[in-house]
Image (tube, rainbow over the protein chains, first blue to last red):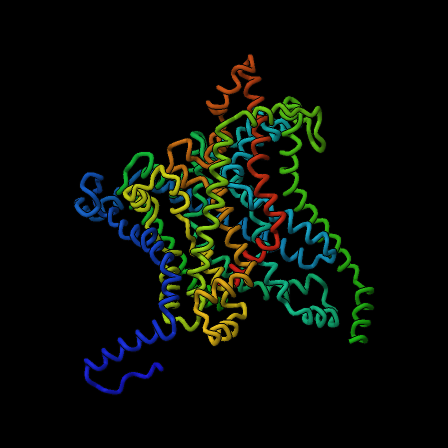
Length: 320
Length: 309
């Protein structure tokens, strides 16, 4: 069916292509499939590809009155401005520290939890634990951060009430840069560990029970089974999750950082994502904001490509 | 089989002490984890119905004391919350139906191995996962399309999500539907007939997963509403909540609302703080109930997504 037309003449060949396309579209009813996909194609073209074209304003002095096409080119002016601005190192540091902290502290919890659940004999307890730990995932970001403000409030929060009763000093948790990252990461773990554990559990339940039986006969302890059977089994999932996380690393939950931001903790809570939002939509510096955001996207892409390469070499796993 | 079953039974009886210890530690750790997750939620629930002064003094731990529903009474009288509630239900239901339907359609076409455009389309979608225009170019587009401050903007912007389309298409790929299609085709069935009359009715799990994922997203998201909507009558619940909860100060709206009831500022702050517990319950309960009813589907959806992106 895919054999090329044998007549060498160009016109004939083109005719052959046309015929093949026609045959595909009508005989194989492919036009119906294109029609199925049409809304999706149009949607992503408009809302994802057209904004990509709009990235050009990072290299232009964009003004609304002149429009995107007629604004003058300024080259790398805004990138230069960003890299040389006093905010640059602070933003980079805050973003990287928060990302790494969140990634490395957040990473082991779901895995350990999944491993434990997998070896739990009591099916009822296991089901209960899964139900409970998955639930916080459905709490919205606004409510999650609202809970933090509520519990940690200096004059009305329960945590401070407990601290005071224990003889300590009240702490203004949300107003101290030193606390910001801990609160951010710990609440992330609280909210999402159960959700991520489900992904690892899926990989663990796919393990052939024969392996455990064989290991039992060989006299392996449970810990040995975890190390020799479970961990190799979830390694592909683990690497994929790691890669996806690195890919999202710099634009990690900036919305959460934004909600957790107070005038007092800015020293730690101002990350690239929140700064892009503020320069762009609060101060309306469209070109500058787009340049910063592009800077972040490029670093993100570079990171994910690098880590993908490394993991392909080391663990023989990759995203593509 | 029988013999080997007995062997394992005897092996299980002769568990080593280290394995027994391991079992106990596992149980304790898992239950401990459950407690850490559950307690804050439980605390919010009992705090919302207890005497605010006792809550603030840290005297409520495991049981509600001096049950006081005045917080809820104030919440019920707070109109913006109900407007937000109404809008969010609208966004979640309409968004789930529209986005879910279009995603399933697209997913079906890229899931067909005999479709010559499947690969191109997959790449077309995959690119958007790793690279996008970013905040401002998207904002400029939305604004120039005249979508700001319209009821539809939250349904449209980020309305379709690549990840969900891929989840659905991998479901269609993995379920054994090709032979079914061939049989249907011999009977003269078109893709339309096959999709609507055969495939959708037997694919309840993925239909539910799509509706849930989009619905929960619309219910929980606040950022798009924050940047694209100014008018209170369009705002979803999360924006109202943001005003009420996500700030270290008592919002001006709440203080206006309470100023008649309380004489001192301090008493007012305390009342406002305790009201927040009830607000959290009101805002989160629908999603948690939905989750408890449809938990099976949520778990399926996540597992589907992780199998192949």
